[in-house]
Amino acid sequence: MEVSNAMLLVAVVVAYWLWFKRISRWLKGPRVWPVLGSLPGLIEQRDRMHEWITENLRACGGTYQTCICAVPFLARKQGLVTVTCDPKNLEHMLKTRFDNYPKGPT
Image (tube, rainbow, N blue to C red):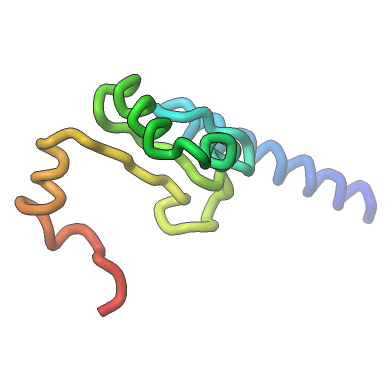
């Protein structure tokens, strides 16, 4: 019984690691840590949050996607967050395809 529990734990860890490597490969922006996501960077930069986000946007060309908490199925769309200051993206979200983006409870 203990061997099967150990094998299950190893399988879960390997599955998580593969998932994490897959999503972190194409995420731009602040560093994403296993399980913690980009939360350590947010906490570290809490006193200069706006400047830090602006620096990340400049480094990534105006748009980046990050993962606040890197735990599969914890949040909708796997907890991915898109940050943008690109005028074309903003127009798309706020005007052209406004109805495509959830606004919260009504």
